[in-house]
Length: 99
Image 1: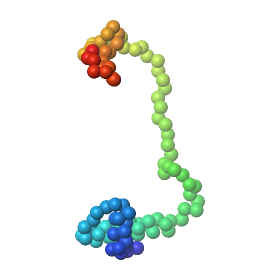
Image 2 (image 1 turned 90 degrees about the vertical axis):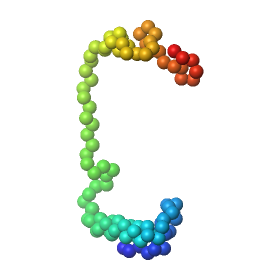
Image 3 (image 1 turned 180 degrees about the vertical axis):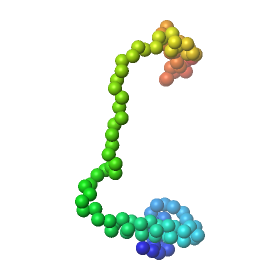
Image 4 (image 1 turned 135 degrees about the horizontal axis):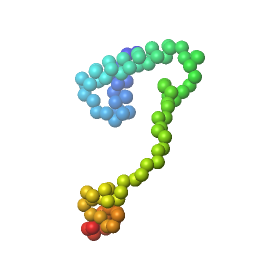
């Protein structure tokens, strides 16, 4: 399906795209090719294909939960710039105070 110059300009206007004259010619060819590809797809018999939202089956890959010991707080807080007891101390989110 060959798109006319006016059709390309109308599509560009609907998309709020400013295009030059050379872009009109290029887009006319590219959009026409896209529409030709859709025409080929339209001819494919899909009567026996059930509607689906996915083209391939989805599988969740989830590992089992394994209970393990936590790291000691002292190891976790070793490189903390500021700490208070066994916690990280950070700037207040809604305040200008420093830790």
